[in-house]
Length: 304
Image (cartoon, one colour):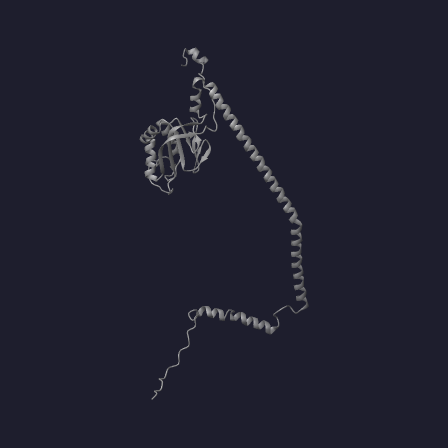
């Protein structure tokens, strides 16, 4: 015997996917404000909506359109007329720039040739007038390239160049950071000379007795030529003795203090052979004893 099926209540309607976005739905359903809608309806009822109906209004609108069209037409015509002139001036300017650039390159090439010629003449003068010690004079003055055993010292900025605090450079007059300074390189070079280096070069730039290491902003200049880190210092001499003497010197300890205080990266190693180029430019001077003047002769005192 079949049993009657139980009564079931009517299922609720499915929930809309956008039920939670009631505010967005209201904005979409009523995109036009009611005030704007009423104003538009009144204009349609009054007959003021759409294009103007009176003759004066039509004439005014036509005049405005004509003026606008005239302005656009004149602008287009002027642009078309001036376009060739602007293009011609641009081409002339490009030609002038290229010509001046070529002339500057030519002058720079001439300067390099003259500088090389002067340097070569200076080297020959040192060799000719140096007597028996001409080769030694040329070596000490940086007039000739040198090759021999030595050492290699690499000094580089710290990875974090914004460090601060006390340290060996605290009273040197500039910020204590992890960036290598010109004064640091001055001390390194002086320490190498004192330790027995016979010739030194930084990043391929040969140093002489007249070389200057200065700063221009954050850049280090050697004889007015900018260098970029890492700074590779090559020194000719007895590699083992030179390395030991520099490490024990006050300047070597200074470099070690920079490494410990500011994380400046350094590495030093002996080299069986290093080659240093000649100095790019030399200044040849002759020293002569100064003769005793009239005042010295009158007083009976002279110079020795």
